[in-house]
Structure formats: C-alpha cells, structure tokens
Amino acid sequence: MRLRDAGFLLAFSTALLPWGSLSLARHGMPLDLAAWFPVAFMFGLVPWLDVLLGKERSNWRSPAQARELEERRYFRILTLLILPLWLGTLAWCAWQFNLLPLGPGGMLGWVVSTGIIGGVLAINPAHELIHKATRLEPVVGGILLSSVGYQGFKVEHVRGHHVHVATPRDSSSARMGESVYAFVPRALWLNVRNAWRLEFRRLCERGIAPWSWRNEMIRWGLLWLAFLAVFAALGGMRGLLFFLAQGLIAAATLEVINYVEHYGLSRKEIAPGRYERVTHHHSWNSPQRYTNWLLFNLQRHSDHHEQARRRYQALIHHEDSPQLPAGYATMFVLALLPPLWRRVMDHRAREAGRTRD
Image (cartoon, rainbow, N blue to C red; front, side, top):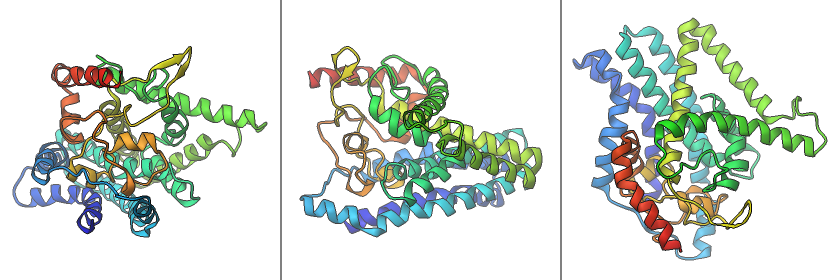
C-alpha cells in the first residue's frame, strides 16, 4: 500500500520531460530532435515501463478501508498541486519556445510535446477534480482545462458523457469500426457544442438568462481569453500561436484516450431512447501499474463510470470488465494505426458484448 501510494508521485515526473529535452541537447543531440524527447518517452519508453513494473489488481478489502482511502488528504493534495506545477511548466515551455533556436521540425516537436504533457498533466488531473463535490476541486479543474482551451469538458463530461456513455448520443464513445481520425475531430466539435447546449438548458430551466455571468461556459471562456492575452503579451504572435496549438494537441490527446476507453462498447436499449444503467462493463479497463501511477488510476476507468464520485485512490480493478491488452500509452499508438487497431480490438469488443449477453 505504501509503495502504491508513493507511486502516484510519478504523475509529477511528466513536468521534467521538457528539461530532459534540453539536457539531451546539451549532451550533443541535435536540438530539433531533442525537442521530440517527451513524445518518445511517453509512447516509446512508458509501454516498456508498463511491462517491467507489471500489473496492479489489488483492491481495498472492506468498506472501512475504502473510507479511510477516500478521506486521506495526501491523495487530494497531489491533484491540487498539479495546478501550479502545470502552469509553471506551460509558462517555461512557452518561454523556451521563444528563446530556443528551433527549426521547423523542432518547433513542431516542442509544441506537440507540450500539448501531450498538457493532456497528461493538466486534463487528466482536471478530470479527477471536476467530479468532486467540494468547492475548491472543481474550480482547480476548470482552471486546468481553461489553460488548454478545453473548458467545455468540465460541463460536457460530467453532464453529458457520464449520462450517455456507450450510447449513440455520446460524442466521446467511439463506434465499432470508427477510426481515431474520424472520431477525434467529431468529438472535439460535438463536446464543445454540447457543453454550450447543456449550460444554456440548465440556466433556462432555472429562469436565468443564459448570456450572463452565471453561464459557466462564459466564465471559463473569459479565463481562457485571459490566458491567451498573457501569452500574446509576453510572447507576441509566436506566444499566442504556441498557446493555441498546445491546447489543441492536449485536447486531441484526451480524445484519443476517450477513443481507447470506450471503443466499440455499448449499453442495451431497454426502451426507445432509454438504456440500461451504466456499469463497469461499459468501459475498457487496464491494470498496468506504471501508467496508473502516472495517470492517477485513470485506467481503472470501468469503475470510474460505475462510481463517478469515487476518488482515484479508491477505484477498483474489475476483473470482469472489458480488458485492454496493454496500457494507454501502447493503445494510443495502436489507435493511430487503424488496420492494426481493428485487428486487435474489434474481436475483443464483440466478445465483451457477447459476455454480457
């Protein structure tokens, strides 16, 4: 338990990857190549660390132990500390982007690397925080999401995705046979649109003017504009474009993970427009220890959808959930190769459906 608890500190290690790029450049690697180091680490080395460190299938053994886990401050502090860490990392990466003599390939590598780090270090902890009922945690989650320009996720994910997951109405559930290249643009557009619609509907039902400060999308949108203005003021057009690009890549990284988490799984329609209750059978599960440390147990996604308010440290591994053949880093790369992805995943998705029948 102590090793597992300490393992979540690895989430902070993602912020060191850009420093690793500069260290490699100082030791002789061409700077434009070194700029891609975070990408190589996340999708080249992490899969091997998953293999090396094995799988974690242990669960709490009693309701009392679950309550003790939920109440421990240590786990809550870790996710809250991500906010200053990420904002500092983002500012430093933007500063280096303006400072370093990067060629076109190096600039692309630096922006892609920053965006992927944002997907891991900003959006993933934000996903944990926006589900919580405290005052502070959803606010911190909203700030993190605004820093990558995907603030609508705070609204749509909780009130849209968790309601409609594994149904045709969910923009974040990939259909069987759908490629990631079709899914990601659709998800990015529909999630933003749905967030505005959900917030308008909420306010109209309460008799509140939707175009007002009470609209969560407007408040978070203004914060995003403030971020944009700061990056433009300090870095000019280059700083502005860097901020926009890293956010787009971070959001796209999230949607590739959504693609992996829900591909081909569906809930049974029990009446026209009504579906069975969401359970741990409606998301893919993955027990790879290293990536779960890195992502605050995100790979225990099956239990997260069954118990959305449960904190990451208390999420359960369900052996009877649909199981991915590897961790998220490996599956991310596989998703980018649609023929190989379908060969690996289609029969697993069909088998998951037959097992539930």
